[in-house]
Image 1 (spheres, one colour):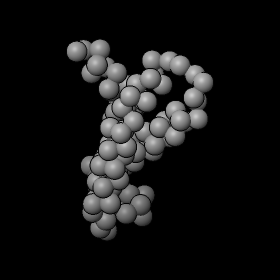
Image 2 (cartoon, rainbow, N blue to C red; image 1 turned 90 degrees about the horizontal axis):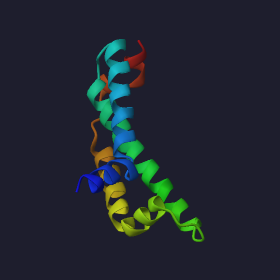
Image 3 (cartoon, helix red, strand yellow; image 1 turned 90 degrees about the vertical axis):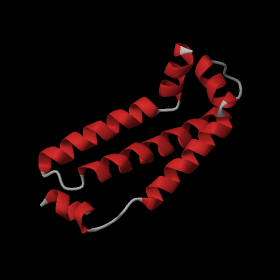
Image 4 (cartoon, one colour; image 1 turned 120 degrees about the vertical axis):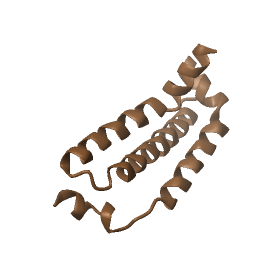
Amino acid sequence: MLKKIIELLNYSNTFISGSAALLTYGVTFQLNGIGSFIYSIFVFFSTLATYNFQRVVRADELINYESDFLNWIRTYKLSLFVLIGISLSILTALPSDKHCSSSTLLS
């Protein structure tokens, strides 16, 4: 069971996305704190969607190769596409107001 959880966190890029979101939160909070949470959510889901899409596409190109990683991606390909869809849906639903603009963050 623990092995499945670790594989999910590693192979689905959840750990990488979470790390990128925490780094974004820390940097934006240090700059001025406005919009820190929204930026972090944006970075988390955009990283999750982009990395998973790239991995699914690349796994299809590597037909002649075998590894635990590629086998996991091929097994859970539909789940990864669902995760990509959820991520893109959340990204489109994020608020875009004046408190979250890049000019506000950099001023």
